[in-house]
Length: 497
Image (cartoon, rainbow, N blue to C red; front, side, top):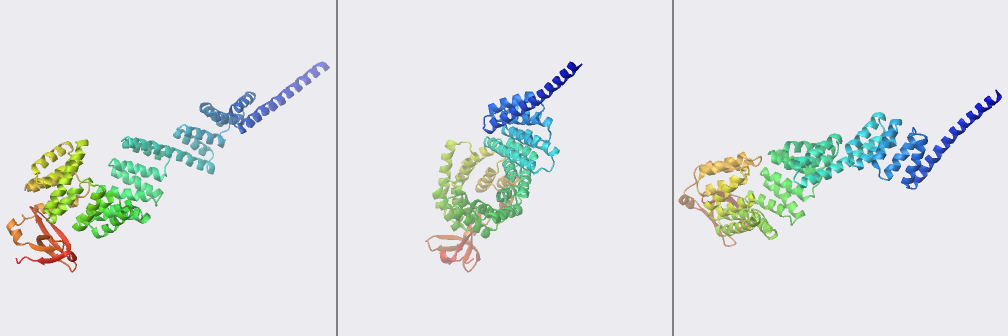
């Protein structure tokens, strides 16, 4: 009996000794793994953790160490597996959630990363670390999406770029840059309603985002809402008044409302900020032209001609001004230049609708209306929804004295206009007016202005001011008003009629 009791006691002692020894052995290999990991010896750390784990498979601490070691040696699949097992044992292990989400982000699996973080936030609500980490995951997700969307956009896949950003913003709202780029992609797709919505969302997130106001101004221009176009341009200018592009946009918005004097101020500032920017010089010249300040327009267009002599339609614009001023010889030279530059461009791009349109316009100005009409008919056949050739066709018919056909072309151009309908309405109104006086009657009614530069112009003085006069001039069937400042006038000879 005594021997049996002694045997049982010995067995119990051995069991206790074995149990205590296993615990010490587990701790030894776990600590050894930590030591290796601390010295960046991740392979050695993984082996030590694996041994410790065989002794105690239910230790979430050992599995966490093993997961980190696997991550260190870039064995991400096994790391993910171990982190998942950690969370099965200890669903409140914050480190496992964070590391697991980081791995998914690094792999580009951003939705999985967010899913992990959201799972953690459900179990550990109102944790500031998780909230911050969720933002970091979203930042990585949005940054990656922006890069990918830009690649798609550069491949002329704007619709796919927009869809990508739209989907990402569903999971990660609140990023102003992403909302702005989404609005930009919609703008390029001519989806102006969605562009407007995205840009407004951008400004809700960041009211100081002046580029969103700038693009929103262009959206409203395309939608034909000139009041909102101007309002948005003014908001952009208020936030950044030293940006040449914003000054140019504000000037153009004022120009669209025929507030020319105010427009000049901002367009001049745009040119002063970037004196070699051809587009800004052209804008300034154009506002002078539309305000019938032809001398100033010629000055700006001449600067542009030196900077970029083949700027699209530049010489046609100059030719029209010279025609209005009665300087037919100079107008012919400008039309010839436009025709020449268009011909050069068409050698490399024979189907360009812009070049063909400008070429036809120049030919018509040179009196080759039949040839111009043949070209413009071809452009309209190939590009039936391109508005500009209908405007040129109207001018060709007007030159050929086909008023009804000119009106039909203008009506078609108006149908294709999302914006700028006003100036087309003005053209229609002028063509619908009573027939112009006969050439003889016009001649009888003309006053003569002698300029100090030796030139003289015939027309009808419409208004007189202390510093300037307004002269109505006629060319064929077209009429217009020209402003001359008195300091440029030698003398005036008024008609007796």
